[in-house]
Amino acid sequence: MPKARTSSRGGFTTKVRRNWFVPASASSTQGAVTVTFLVHRDGTITDVAIAKVSEVVAFNRSARNAIEMSSPVDPLPAQYPDESVKFTLAFYFNDVPPPPAQSAAPPQ
Image (cartoon, rainbow, N blue to C red):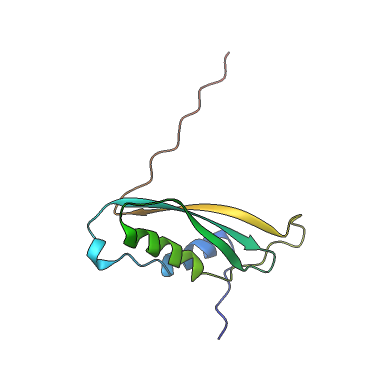
């Protein structure tokens, strides 16, 4: 049976979250994992790789599986110039993302 497709960036996030399972054995441990992957013109996800590894092996598997299980997603727009696009997504386990870096104000 084909997997349901998403409809927008919000739909993509919802789909990944539904496929993201935090291992019970690590439910109170903090960590972060960064995953890179390609989305192809037809919405297929490939080349899933861990770009920033967690010391907790189960977190690495959990993040990778969340992306792999979310394929396919919405196809790329017809006007998109390339055959695929690379994404980077960070997963935070029992933690929150750091605040965005503040850019310096331009000189007056």
